[in-house]
Image (tube, rainbow, N blue to C red; front, side, top):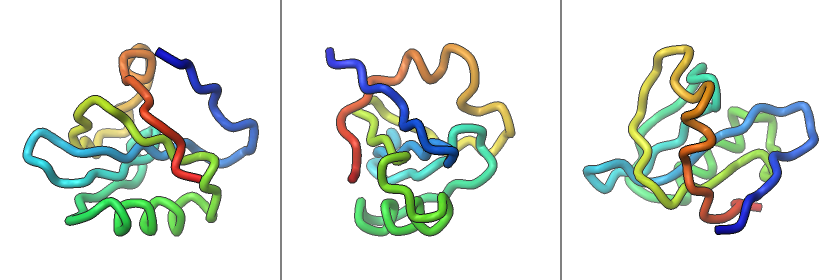
Length: 89
């Protein structure tokens, strides 16, 4: 497994991936914004519009990601447990 370092820019990380039902999810690291999408392109477009157009701050996960709008959805060990697949740059 390759470890990908988070971007050094000040923008927040946005994770995208499919949920257990096959829908695309885009969610900000702290759960402050997110949504469900019918395809990857729409999830990426939304993530870019919400994070100030920083593609280096978008991480696509290999493991399923469920939309959780609680403010602490991706803090602590949750991020370490996710398997990054690739950056969306």
